[in-house]
Length: 172
Image: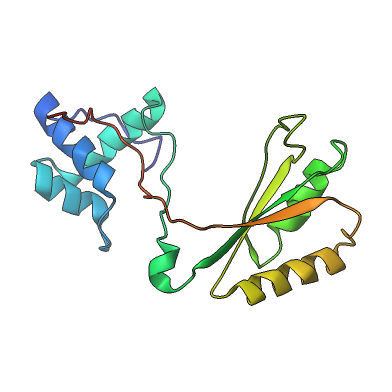
């Protein structure tokens, strides 16, 4: 979407609601996803793109992301490694860990003292626990992190993953 395009309005509120419901299901994996959505909800491709641009400007849609159902791909050994990093070092270490090929997600969170001293979280996905632990060992060795307290938390359950919701769910 280009912010410099002139604003077009969606044709009608009903079409906008249909578009919101379709966007919740995810973009179709086709060369022109906005056109495919337009055909399904009775709008032009330009109207769909204008609605998306307006929803971004209004804050309804903040970003478009990707949900990867990694367990379906055979990636079932998933470890969240939590670190107790000195606050003055957490931003730099976070950048270094995020650049590691084995790290798929890295972010900072506030500590929850006294029971949870960890402030840096990174996810390592793999097909087997041994591979995940070997990747973690290589990261610890490569960044000299032996003295940084950490815990490795493997996933035991897969929770339902879904994208953003923009319409009210109907209740029975």
